[in-house]
Image 1 (cartoon, rainbow, N blue to C red):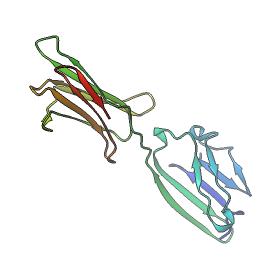
Image 2: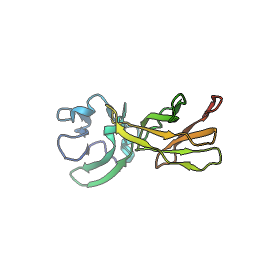
Image 3: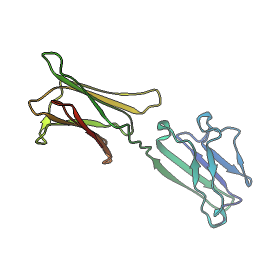
Length: 184
């Protein structure tokens, strides 16, 4: 079905203002949502075959969510929804240790994750080490940062693994006694 002469409206969550509007054979930006200004493009290479994807440039965490597409002409109309999940793998976790006091501790932190990550400590044998403290927060760009502190176990090697719900992960391992480090 040729969509060249149709109205194609992408919106979220309200019909107006819209994410992108194609009407009367051209793009119309007059009531576009401000956060999408200069970032959307309706790809028209296959519009005569009824294919017209929306491209969002410079995607941000706030772009996640449900998008609606409504198409209408004098003879036809239809709609569909698309769920966009923005993901990001954060920075390599970094372990730092304080072995100069009676309470030897290690700190691990990483930023830049989407969706929200979790952090797990393990010892030399792969056993979980319970953290004494930890926190997750969103930074100014709505990406997640996570950190945790442990009292050092008797084992000399510890690993801090940060991962999210879509099986993306990064880790840092450190040999505390002797300070030999390796990261991945």
